[in-house]
Every structure is written in structure tokens, then in C-alpha cells.
Image (cartoon, rainbow, N blue to C red; front, side, top):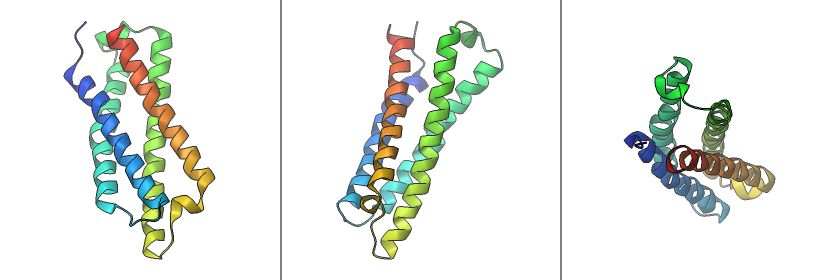
Length: 142
């Protein structure tokens, strides 16, 4: 089976997006200036590329695309759960990033002042990324 180029691009770009997410949080955590351009670029790229990729895949599955019919029920459930988790993680990143930027403008640091929330988000993000890369590997490399 050949791997669709957009699937490869999405799997690889997700690692770069994760680097952007970690950079934004780390800068704020270490009480350095909030990297708004990195945050905005990461959020926009994730929204326009990877969320669109998931939306495209979801529409193919719901429309009875021939490729979707070859997937097992378990794999379809895994795709759906990963898609929902990824969307939630993305939306939480955007909201927390906006809050962090606003707090920075008031001379406060959002992430280190809320370690429980920050670590919960990072775990959610990590699960989303690992599940996506695992699905990619299972679907195309095994």
C-alpha cells in the first residue's frame, strides 16, 4: 500500500507543531517573553493543515470512501477517538495561548502559575500526538 503524501506531510508536520507548542509553553514557564509570533504561526498552521487533514479524512469515512471501507471497526474507532482528542487538544492550546499572552501583557506568567493545568494539557497533547503517530504507523507501516 502506498502512503498518501498528505498523510506523510501531516505526520511529520505534527512533530514540528509539537515543537512549537513546547517552545511556547517553555518560554512562558521560564518567565521569558511570550513568543506570540511562534504561538500564532503554530496555531494557524495546525488549524489550516492538520485539522483540515482530519476533517478531510472524517468526511471520506462518513461518505463511504472506498479506502474507509477497508478499515476494521477498531481502526475506525481509533481514528475517531484520535480526531476528537486532537481537536480538543488544539482548541485548548489556542485558549491557553491566548490567556498566556494576555497574562504576559499584565506582567504575569500563565503556565508556571498553573502547573496542574499546564501538565494536564501537556499530557493531553502528548497522548494526541503519540496516538496519531501510532495510527499512522499501524495503518501504513505494518
